[in-house]
Length: 284
Image (cartoon, rainbow, N blue to C red):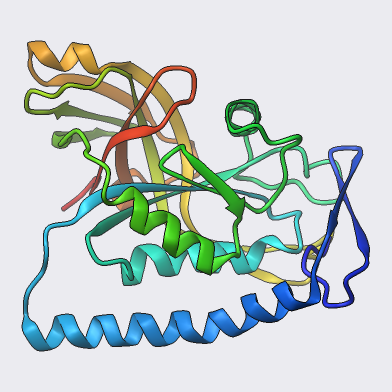
């Protein structure tokens, strides 16, 4: 599967036994390629400025979700970009928290993604309905549950994250993490807030790697960032009015809980905007 082509012709994308079509403007292709250079420059300048001043401005959490798959040949650049967003934190005022959600509809095309889950496919489909997207696709990036776009579009991502960082959020705090085998428990709390919504928690692998044997990425060594291994609803924001809320998560059998991260986020009902997020290592 190839999404960006410089010839401007109608291209087809096989996915989940259906066909999806897009038209690529050659001028847009060039602008994305050129912007990649300026993104690197922007990140370098921002990092240098922070190092020189020694000042770390207060940052607002912004949740960036990437729906991806090891079976999708246009996904690796988006996976790499997702990792850079977390590692470099290139947007002033934003604390970027990432979730790499591997969908399962590519598993029928020659390679089964070991991180894929129908739960993430369902979440993406619900976003498609909420955000008025005609059909799900990969790589798809969604910022704070409100804005969706091609996962490798760095220009759109930076603008969207900048806007999201200016939106008021619930100050979620994760504490009292304990590990018992594959069982991880913790508590989430928040000061008084004016929002309503659902609370979700996830166990995340900061980094994962796979040598793909078959399919569109056959023969490639893929690196993933922020891979969601399990995610579940743990209550609602109103539950926090009574104090910290304890929750429990079970890591998959092939995961190492001590090397994972816990991410908790608050989302308005029916897949609405993200109104708060927090992330912390399982083992400090």
